Length: 454
Image 1 (cartoon, one colour):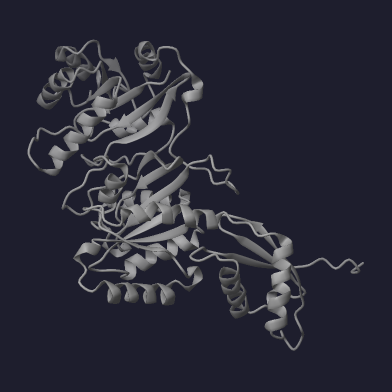
Image 2: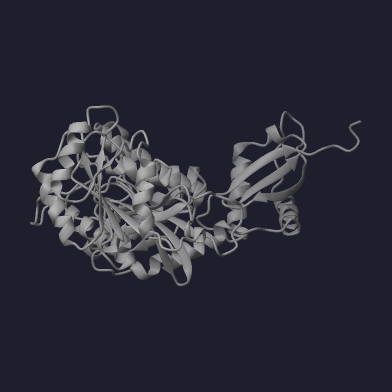
């Protein structure tokens, strides 16, 4: 039986480092800057044969108002409500602070079993802080080093009573998705929500999930980590990834934002479908196009979600301008679905996931070689390839090499002689004739083997 472990403590005591250590991957952003983690992040972790779910939380702050720190604390409270046991970290090198004592009492009042961990105990510098930890009255502290992995065996023994009868089949690995060709309908769809800061990505995720899973507010750039949530929509498993806002590279000056940007780009690479959220008041500026091109270049499926549509005065003219901009700026993926909505009110959101599932099926579409070559015969009769250096190029046949994205191979007598314009013509004809709107299509040319060459 699997159980859930929440990692809590004041800012900058090493919670995210411990989270990464337990899940075995660098999923959470780690930096010396206090308060890097804001949303709670969940992953599957373990120590040896002991498997469990791990929740990384924001650093506890003594705030109870409507501030960002207070909203972060509410997220930690929700994490404790889901946990079977909490790991409270203190910085042994800094010693026990009044904030540690305050939150130690607060966590104990939540009714969750608590294991006290004195982190950063490598060497002798943490020994005085380890001794001070006994004064918290939270039981015997574990000497630990999340960065170096010291103390894992002692943590194993401390967590063992909460495991019950262990079943390794409950363990499903980390947050990463390994992309494979084809889809049997049982694998979860990896769906990333991306966009510029403060366009409503986290609000959209919360509305889809029906709960306040992500930290939201008027402040720009609240989300820093890419947070993955497993979700079920109409019987289909979906891994929903909320990402940090992507700004122009020249504007990214802080190290933490640079790390967040790298995490968001990584989420795009591992996603299958990417929803680009736009602000209806400022749509498809240069940064939006940069993000969209990156998604298409990665071969991922792109869906445009225009948020705050309830504030638009003339919807027809605005939508026409957006469509024209996409046609001219992203011709390599014509027909990208556009969903107008309001994440705050929920209007139009019911059309988003059906559009995602529909275009995902197109992304997995496979066309038989026979159908492709019958189509190719008609194309060549109507529009044969141009001459190359005064010589005719003969296209012998065509086949689909893979899906996700649909990738086709054309075998020709002189593949390097086919101009780029003719390749674009074939791609556009494929998209139109085989009903593949909005899907990135890849086309490669190879030289067919001549059986009489020897």
